[in-house]
Image (cartoon, rainbow, N blue to C red; front, top):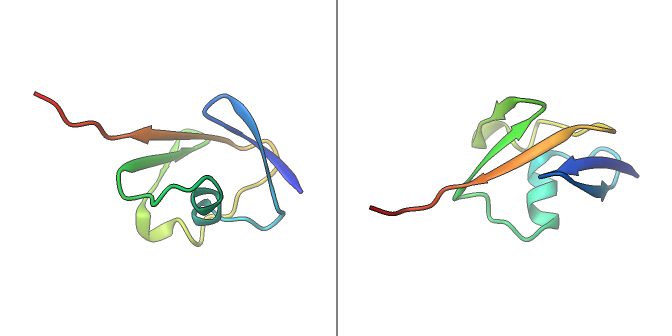
Length: 67
């Protein structure tokens, strides 16, 4: 197991988890969020290839509509 920081909170994940695994773990479809890992934007087509490591800081930014 590894522990990352997800939006300021500790989140355990199995070792070898990718960003897409994190999204599945928390029940997020990933369509309406931007993912930032250690201040680097992870594009949707790279989420399954980008592996997370112990201590990574992940921010999920939710798009909100409005006017």
